[in-house]
Image 1: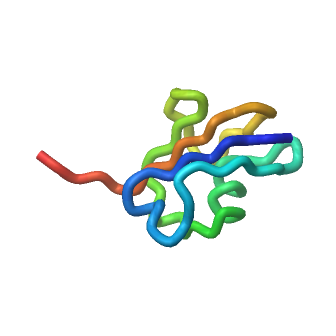
Image 2: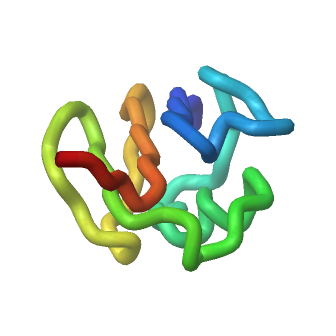
Length: 74
């Protein structure tokens, strides 16, 4: 199945902004994070198709996965 992965802020450094990835059915967000080579501790916010999800959520064909690092500001 095809999934679009979008990385934001510091997760993009030395990686990519947007990438189409082929993965097996039933792949979880956590497995995708490992697949693209990001340490689990670097991802704090996960969105699938614009909805907040946890890393155990399963991806489906055509999903857009957005990954964010810890974000500070004020």
